Length: 214
Image (cartoon, rainbow, N blue to C red; front, side):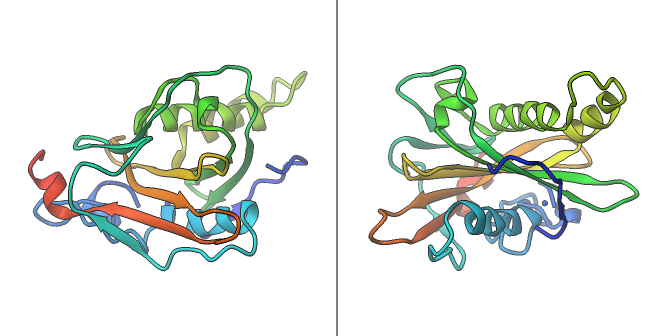
């Protein structure tokens, strides 16, 4: 993802519209190759931060069916998701925030931590983006400084790309938001290999999977 990292002392983008290079083609079908879009660049940047030295994916392998193996699942309306055995609260994952553009900036965030931090047993595109926007607001809001509120609110609303990496579980999701209509989508599932492998694989939905739901 091209852009500038929002400075923060702690360690740890196109949307679904075809006109923005998003996952739907000219006939409304899903385009599985996301490697040219900001969310893919954000993924590579996040892997460099949280999995340095690991071999990043060269592309997103298409998923032809609806079975991708637990804890992941496929929803024709929102893309990939995770179904967790339990939910936990109070977890604080690492995060890095990036901003693109100056006149009308969009924000992206890389989150690294347990999937349970999202606060729901089902982690889908809508829930992940909502969680990412909450984290963005919390990061940019300064306690005791009311002047920071407008910027934090604008930044949270402008989050268009999200990468979530659960290193312990070996999975991750990439979500993007259509800047025109606000539709959310998880076009990429990430599988993180064992430490001795040091590899990361990415999977995208095959066109026919989504076409049947459009």
